[in-house]
Each structure stands twice: as C-alpha cells, then as structure tokens.
Length: 235
Image 1 (cartoon, rainbow, N blue to C red):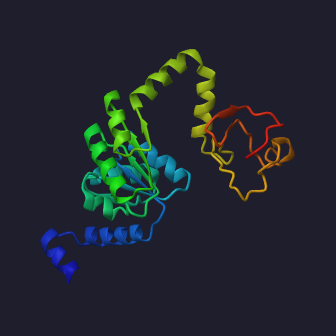
Image 2 (cartoon, rainbow, N blue to C red):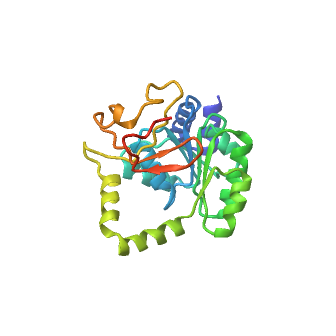
Image 3 (cartoon, rainbow, N blue to C red):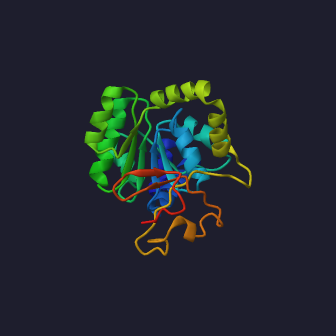
C-alpha cells in the first residue's frame, strides 16, 4: 500500500524500489564509513574506501553526482539522497552503527553541523572533517572532530614538494595509484596486547619475510620512531 501510495505521489516506481533496496542494504551495515558530500573532495575519499574494501555510505543532495560516481567506479554506490546536515538523513545512513564519518561538504559551516550531529548520535565514531578556512579548525575539533584536513594546505604542500622533491612525489603517487596486482599501500597495523609480536625485536620477527617493510613505529606514549632498527622491541 505504501509503495502504491508513493507511486501515485511521486510517479517513479523504479526509483522507489531502488531506494527501498538501498535502505535495506544500509540497515544491515555496521562499522561502516559515512562520507558526507561526493564532490571534488569526497569522491576521492569514496574511491579509496572502495578500493580498500571498506564499506561506506555516501550522502549527497544530487542524484546526478551519485550517477556520475557510479559510472566512474563502474559499480553501484550505497547512498542516501539528502542533506547531510539533516539528522534524519544521517540516521538513514546508519550513523549510530558507523565507525567513521567524513564531513567533506563544500561549506565549513555545513561540515561543522555534520560534526556536531554525528558526535551526538555516535560518541565513539571517528570523525574526519574538511576545513577550508584555517579559523574553522579549532571549532571543528571542539565540536567533536577527531581530525581536521585542509585541502588547501595539502595542495600547497604538494605543489612545493613537486618543486623540491619531484622523485619522492612521483614514487608516492605511483604507489598510491597503481591498480595492478602488485598494489602497495602504506598501512597502519596495530599490535594487540595478545599478539605474539609483543616483547620481540623486529629482527626476531618474520615481518619482512611476510612482505611488510616497517618504516615507522608509534610507541604507546605517542612518539614516532622512524626507520626503526632491528633491535627495536615491539610493544
């Protein structure tokens, strides 16, 4: 009855069925990422999440943007059409069950609203917020953002590195964009308290034989050890 009523009001049976199917898929998700905004920044976030096999839900106002993203990725994109600053839209995207929220909207104010709402619905999720104006970063962190990313700053640093360290930039680009069988990524691996690696020196492990090149360690106190020697004890 509800489908027939919606058809009479909206006149789009195929669209209604697709939305219902999408809602059922989202209802079964847990620990997923929600990417708010699939524009010039968010589409790259979605692409990397999909390439890494991490389930995600895209929230965007434009059906055309979603269709363009699906055409680019050659696959269906799990999404919710609507404004990410609308609490009901975030709930449809499964905000209470999500582990990550990416606020990648064009406007800093909208990203601030998304951050506030996401933190209220899910106190434990990781929130990564886009920041255009430097003065907004502090507000985003106070609102609950776990980390704040400025595309303008990153773009400026990238341009400077193209001048100063072109080969290093080319190496990282090739590593991140290579879609072949030998795809390489810089990964973050957490050593659990129950791991057999705890208390062992790097030289005593089989990490290198298993294809892992340890380029840095982060100790429990937050300090980084770059290019750690084989004598470094894992904690």
